[in-house]
Image (cartoon, rainbow, N blue to C red; front, side):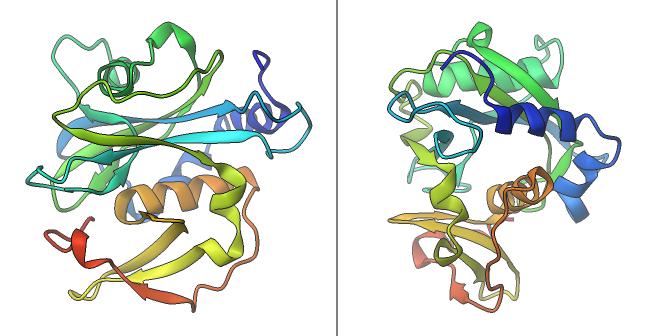
Length: 224
């Protein structure tokens, strides 16, 4: 599906509104820290007939290598630090997506740019870029040093009330999480995703009182 689906066209309109970005990043909004950028990338599953909803929307999540010192094994959006050669944060997000999962910048239509948000454990100031992948193909791991796997996740699965919980960390932190099969999306990525689906109007009623501990494999750092 090369045409922008109605659900994403509506999201693009919402993200153009003055306060929408602040509604996504919430208390993580920041003006300080080392610059980085991530790409929140959507596309339409070719096996799903086009329609007016979001049933065919897929989202790219990378699984960090378990060998990394920070965020080992965690789910994240493609992205990384802004290099001096990058024209801006959008260029950095697109370059990182190409380096990590092989998606060329020319294949992506940018739908909106959110305010910078903080990742407390690393001190990064991350600009989230929302994009539409016009001509998708099977995802691949292009950077085997940093990425262990890449996942194409159905947005409707993420939104299932049974797949949404509040994570709890032994240090007292908590926040929204999305649990799909063996995937546990929490911390910075979970916060951004929760804010985006809320602002987009896609959120389904779920029970924040459903709580679960952060899996032990992520407890090397706070994931914040």
